[in-house]
Amino acid sequence: MPTVDNPAGKTLAELGAASPDEVAQLFSEVRALFDNQAAKQLDPATWEALKQVWTGRKSGVLTLITDNWLKPATPELKRAVGQELNKLKAQVESTLEARKRDVESLAEHAASAKDRADLSLPGVLRPVGTHHLIRQVFQEIEDIFFSIGFSVVEGPEIETPYYNFEALNIPEFHPVRDDMDTFYLELPKGAPGPLLLRTHTSPVQIRTMEKRQPPVRVIVPGKVYRRDNPDATHSFMFHQIEGLAVDSDITFCDFTGTIDYFVKQFFGESVKTRFRPSYFPFTEPSVEFDVSCVFCGGSGTAKSGGTCGKCKGSRWIELFGAGMVDPAVYGFVNYDPKKVSGFAFGIGIDRLAMLKYGIDDIQAFFQNDVRFLRQFP
Ligand SMILES: [Zn+2]
Image (tube, rainbow, N blue to C red; front, side, top):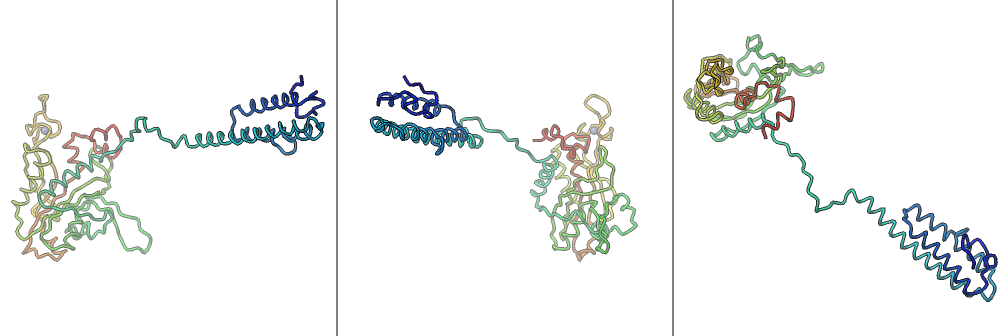
């Protein structure tokens, strides 16, 4: 019985095959060898190697069989060898072709596995952010003023001293400028200046009145900047909403009624408001608005029995400044102070948010600690 170790390398005579049956037996052993190798797990590289071993032109098994078995075969065996060789060739080629498709689709599958989605799996929950508390309070305040006929205007954060001070009746060397310690911009030589970061949203009053004739009813939300050292109640950047109403017949009564309406809408119907005389260069008369302490209900006494720490027993909390627009300001915008009157106010958003939501450190708004932010979804 001829054995098949590397049969293709030897001649039929060396293998001891002398009859068509023995030739057929040899070929069946070669086929088994091929089937065994082709059945293994293949990747593109091992498939290519298998193809070379069997069909390589110089020393592939098919070539060796042609050279060693077919060519020197005796006339009696030639026909049998030729038939068997053709069968083997067809089998090798078709099997290699079939395995090639397997290998390719396997590689494709591996490459696309990452992109393929299993629609039966639970979805990926992506965290959805919310508006920052400051933005929420802006929205709350804007909604209240929208409901009584105000609209929103915005203005630049980089201002000229004219809009930030002079046109608001704050001439140079006015002591109020000391209270608003100002960031000035460093400008290239020869550039027109000076320029500064606005210290309040009030410049937009002037910019609005320059563009519009009365009636004007606007609020101006935005960021303002002062050279304050950061602590629990100060920040070098904070937020304001400026308000301005100018018309032919606006009275002090309209003014206090509007503010009272706003404060009650914001803090709740149960709060009281009061105003005290104050001073601002661009309003006359000027007032400070107070709200009855929202922490002790205006009693001055904490729930635990002692003095309320928030209002220090005074029963009132200072809210913001306001007043009737100083007639001198109308002179800067070509309004006739004899025909128009109006009021203006400047609400500190951070302060109001702290009061309403019981936050005792303004820095919490700017530290972006999600444990804080998540409390205000
Ligand atoms: Zn209190």
